[in-house]
Amino acid sequence: MSEHDVDTRPMIETHDVKKIYANGKVQALDGVDLSVSAGEFVAITGPSGCGKSTLLSLLAALDGPTSGTIRVGPYELQHLRNADRFRRQEVGLVFQLHNLLPRLSVLGNVEIAMMGSERPRAERAKRAQSLLRDVGLIDLSDRRPTQLSGGERQRVAVARALANDPSVLYADEPTGSLDSRSVSTVLGLFERLRTDHGVTIVLVTHDVAVAASADRTVHMLDGRIVEP
Amino acid sequence: MTHFSLVIGKIWEQKARSTGITLAVALAVMTVVTLTVVSNGLENAAAAVLTIGKADFTVAQKGVSDILYSSLDNGQVAQIQSTPGVKSAVGVLLETERINAANPLFIEIGIQPSDLESFGVTILAGTAYGPDAPNEVMLGWRAAQDLGLHVGDQFKANGTSNTVVGIYSTGISYGDLGAMFPLPALQAYNRVPGSVTLVFVKVVPGQSVAKVQATFEAAHPELTTIRTASQFGRADRNLVFLKAAVTGSTVLAILIGAVIVGNTMLLSLFERTREFGLLRAIGWARSRVVAMVVSESLILALIGSAIGVGLSFAVAAGLESLPQLNGVLHSSFTAEAFWRGLVVGLGMAILGSLYPAIRAANLTPVKALSNE
Image 1 (tube, one colour):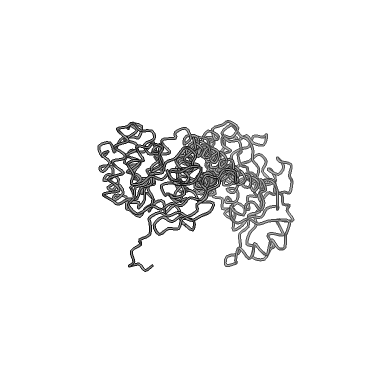
Image 2 (image 1 turned 135 degrees about the vertical axis):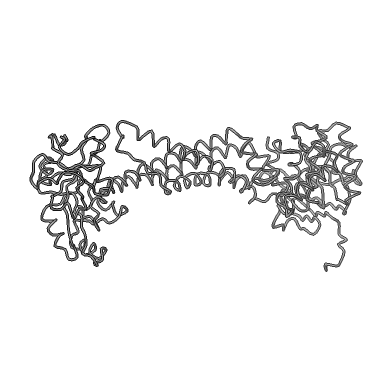
């Protein structure tokens, strides 16, 4: 494909992905085939231990598959040489437990994601402030995470995930520890990201109501994608 | 936010760990710097003996444990004198004696009055002693000042009372802090007739000192020549052993300190597993994680080194004031001592933090983030 051709392939594509842990005793993924279009919002649901989070960690290049192929945009993850750079440039991650650094301010927690990027220091701070404005937390930018509510912390985590303009956003149970009001705030934020910025979102959740906010829901059982 | 502010923030957050590492570094640096300045002081004091005669080089017996144990007989002095290129060779007996608490190692020089001029001695008051005069002594002007003695006073040394017949200057403070006796008298007092400690040699003007030195050493393998303080170890083995002990202590301090720093940093790593997992998950390169951990350690090491150097001044002053060491120990704070302290501090930090830093950088993000 020449550089002038438009890549019409899906944004994310996996083929027969398997992941085996603990010396072959635990098969977390058993031949997963998944395709997600650019700008699509996909929810992955299924019971605990079905392999949802494992799949997400492979899509984010946090771990490698035992076999199979994974492509995210132009990157073939099984052949990825610099997974750090891939995560920094292409991926935004939101975790259930926020994983904010308690000693840093809200602003610092967003800025830290850009520390390995090419952005100059002043631009990093500007970008972090802009993102906090987007998630409605600019007035709390000097506070510590411990001074925020669960919903506010998760919004900081979303701002951090977007710091490097990722093409895909992976969220692992992002609403799992939130009250219903915060859940709708975070989901509203995801919807805005998709519509305003065209970010592809893959979200793992137990919650059927949360999954319903996605364009499409993928069900998993025993390490496989199954029909609902 | 910068890398530096992030590191400083972490150091401040983990106060107990930071204090522990800083103290470990400070103690190691203090020990090494103190040992170095003390050994430098001892070397300077010992090497000062060589400077008294203002000679081109000094001849001593090879390999003695202490240069003051060097012993050369009259025959050897005559051989030195007859070496081609030698202008003068002055045989001198050097002894030390406790005069009082302030002068535990008072230097006594036995030298013939005929050699005083070539030895660079100037009589400031009174006269020189006679060649075989019993119980006559000359005092260096600094010693006379310290002891409050003048020409005609009595000076008790070597178990006898000696009349001060003159006050001299050598132009070298170490020599001016001692006393000079007729050579046969000092030999008799110390029961070493016909023996001298060192021979101070002046070379014929225009001759190469190094060449004369080399010719002499080739002809007299049982003797050694000393021209500079760094060549002092040729005659004084104690100083060589002392220097080796200081170097050994430095290496040991780095190793023990590195284990302490490494252990503390590892404990910190276990506490911060989730943090490192998160940083790796959001795209921090391994090298950046390594740099962060090593930077923390290096900053603590610099602070610890500064404290250690400060403590070494206090400890050295304390040692010098001890009754057993008063007047014997003169610490010599040189740039080398500070460099050595810095090398110890930074060596501990780098060696100690490297393994924890590499472990932190190689954490699997998924496992680290699931760590409770």
